[in-house]
Image (cartoon, rainbow, N blue to C red; front, side):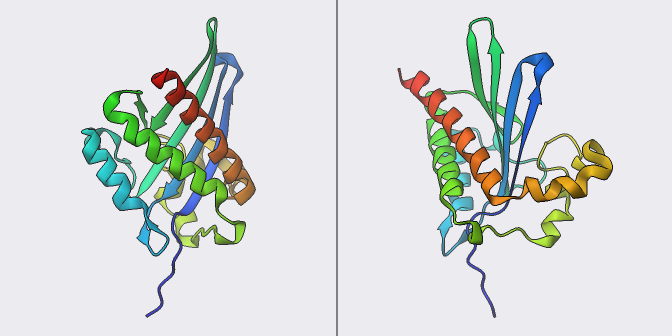
Length: 181
């Protein structure tokens, strides 16, 4: 029996810009596992349970994945930031602070992951977890059409994923600083 110790795997990311709405969003989609490198999946589910919001924040495509959107919107009053976790906005409240802490740690771990440790399974790239999981509510194959095969390498490119994870981490940190102030 061969065991692969991969930690967080099948990580993908993208940036979405909407100049019409003065909005930029950074998306991270990652499969959480429990293995030698950590208990990310168990920690996530335990954090959801302790927060009392478990049903609201489970991934609708695959409960072993987490989809995080860090969003910035330019408004008349400045920049409004928010985190959307598994397609549901995550407000900064006392009971959700542990979720923000989990997301901060997760995005730091992704950013620090050596490129050679990024595991993307071929079956993931051919699955609904990839096609429907990156931009929840949409099929990537329909959004990208024939360009999908050209875009896939960028979506799973470790330096790009790390940059997106860093961007999401910065938004998480900004929200927490504002909340705790």
